[in-house]
Image (cartoon, rainbow, N blue to C red):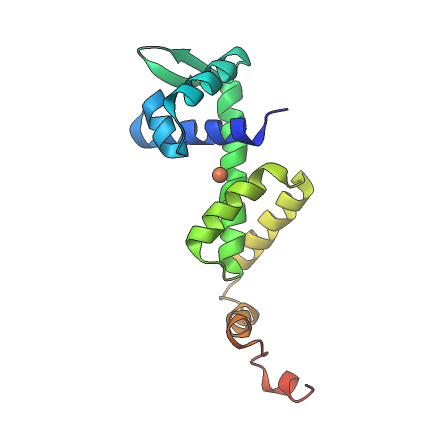
Length: 151
Ligand code: FE2
């Protein structure tokens, strides 16, 4: 089992590799806001566990095993972020919280969240109830008049 911290490293290495074509200790330190010596230590551990290959002058590359794991985390992150934004969480908070949730939630939960996001996004038109939910978040009232009468 990988720690959340180790998963964050794999996620950051994947992102750097996709954006810049390579990942170096300095880049990872910047991305994760950590000091280079601790990054160095974690990268060595990930290398020993077979998730990355670390060559001092060439930088860090993901192994197949590392890339697979990193993609799972990235997919969880993207799914959770989309869901949180769907329920009106501002993007910066959605991004931060997705990063916390991505490590802990059961695969079944992730699968259902993903289904929900895909279901809403592929609906023929933006669902009215989701627009109503936005209103509800603002004033705590259901915008449908026929429902309001029952209050
Ligand atoms: Fe993340």
